[in-house]
Amino acid sequence: MAPVPRTDVLLAVFGGPHRTDLVSTTFRLAHALLDRGATLQVWTCGDATGLTRRSLGDSKPRNVVDWTRDHPSTAAVARGLIADHPGRLHWYVCRFCSDERGMGDQIPEVRRRPPFTFHEHTQAAGKALTLGVC
Image (cartoon, rainbow, N blue to C red; front, side):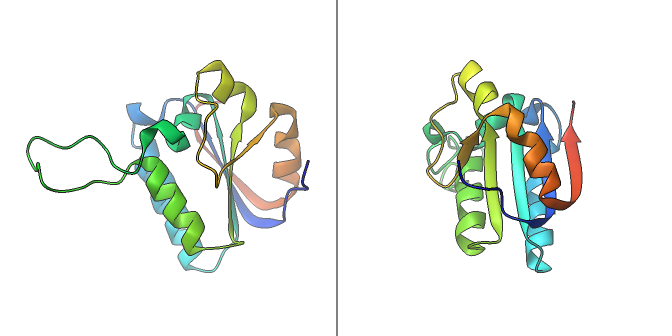
């Protein structure tokens, strides 16, 4: 198992992201930190592991109000952030949580880690911020 790289910030995202503003908060905060030059790791647990599952594809289902506009899926947004900030954004999902929820098939840019390694991630980060429920 590869060592966890040192980062400025760890964003730990827990719970059901589509029940609140957790999705937009996560992506906006990640984007803002990266724009300011920070290094970042995102760890998702629980239903938040679904944000980067491969089955989401590149686009959300079409919106009947704006039928012709393409809206990227959360997996596509995460993939774009990782591609735009090589070596500065590392995205992880809890293997147990993703498997338990049938979300084990993640986009290739995301690494699945056993839950007991979360401690390594907190130790590798200068600051840790938890979003969602614990």
